[in-house]
Image (cartoon, rainbow, N blue to C red; front, side, top):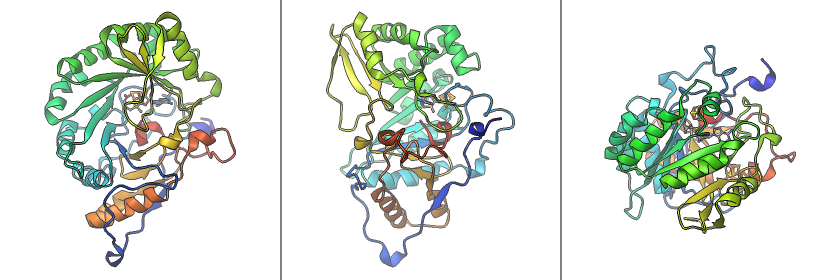
Amino acid sequence: MSERFVPLLDARVRSVALPPSAQIRPALGHIADRLQRPLRDLRISVTDRCNFRCTYCMPKEVFNREHRFLPHSELLSFEEITRLAHVFVAHGVEKIRITGGEPLLRKDVTHLIGMLAELSTPDGGSVDLALTTNASLLRRHAAGLVRAGLKRVTVSLDALDDDVFRRMNDVGFPVADVLDGIDAAAAAGLPVKVNMVVQRGTNEQQILPMARFFKERAHVLRMIEYMDVGTTNGWRLDQVVPASEIVARIDSEMPLEPMEPNYPGEVARRWRYRDGRGEIGVVASVTQAFCRSCTRARLSIDGRLYLCLFASQGHDLRSLLRSGASDAQLSTAIGQIWGARADRYSELRGQAQADASAKVEMSYIGG
Ligand code: SAM
Ligand code: SF4
Ligand code: SF4
């Protein structure tokens, strides 16, 4: 096994000092980091396990029988997740996305959705609660997720061609079953978006078939540039299909025009079909970095707070929780961590400053 195939799920963790009670200021309320970016979104990874082995995310060479997934005792419980989420929401988080690994593999995840759906923002609104899934278990869970309070779902599907998709998920999972999961979610009343990671030489020929198919079905398709997340997927720049090329390919057959973002800091750039029938999004994390408007924090399965998808270290909130910290202490710690944030990996990608040596895996930190 080569050096780069060593997954980095180890102790690259900063411990977080518990603020002494005497020093606790009321730290609730909106906070900004050193680049004046507010904290608005929280991605919570609920499992590092997955029933797929997508070659760009959990390659079989690494995530095999010898791979040690975290034991249950290491995971945050639903109560711990909800308690932390409550503190994040008080700090300005408006959107929470449940992810993984495959989040629907976490036992009783619907129950967690129900607990998070109870949270309310400081102005009394509800939190925008979403989930990203490979859809393999979506038909089974769709109605329960809606009842629990899930607002939206994003389904990952990289190809319509069955052979291409089976090769990419590397467990032979059929396209038809993902489409069935999408139909079940839509029928249960969930707005569905579809994520497609585009890789040169692997599924770029699927851009147009995917665009045509989801335009017809009125689901927003988001095409994502293949990213150098983690260290196990052997990423190369020449495998990235630039978002500009993706848009040009679609525009040549189905003319497009740019749209305004839905909200400040939206990651996907939106394009609408000129015939008025639908839109797509492109996520140009490699070729057009959007770090300046990045308002996302990520909570790993074992309760470490990561400030960037490409971070090499997380901040250990689980130890704080389990050492009996009060909500005020947690709030102060999170405020201090976010306040010191200056991450902008994608802007620096390729430069000496971007330390790519020790990034965490997407399945651990959550996509
Ligand atoms: N298992 C779920 C799924 O696939 O939807 C949720 C977790 S997955 C890590 C979240 C998203 O990250 C998926 O849409 C996946 O395609 C995307 N992803 C994973 N590795 C990626 C990479 N190297 N570049 C771009 N997107 C990636
Ligand atoms: Fe699993 Fe999602 Fe990663 Fe694919 S992208 S291996 S479905 S976690
Ligand atoms: Fe945000 Fe890091 Fe991605 Fe930049 S590289 S957009 S800071 S997650």
